[in-house]
Image (cartoon, rainbow, N blue to C red; front, side, top):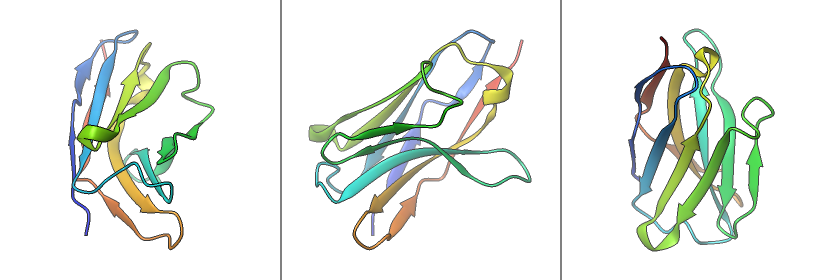
Length: 118
């Protein structure tokens, strides 16, 4: 079992920035793991927007490339999502996910609301 603790959501104006944090109860440095950030609008599916593997490989959704940056601190078992130049369409609940790539077993955080509005 892996527990994930998310923080950093909130209300921000368009063009503003937020940083989300996801602290895992297990090591995130193993090559067989990936921690990702997903987001979900009401009534829609949960989509991957950024992910980082244990050995540092990174992937982004096209919608956030150039604006969002995912990073991690292995010593703290924490993954960050720096979100810049936020847009109203970035409004969603953001979820952290921890996955074992070999088996597909994965765990979810409780979600944190991000609202971009003037």
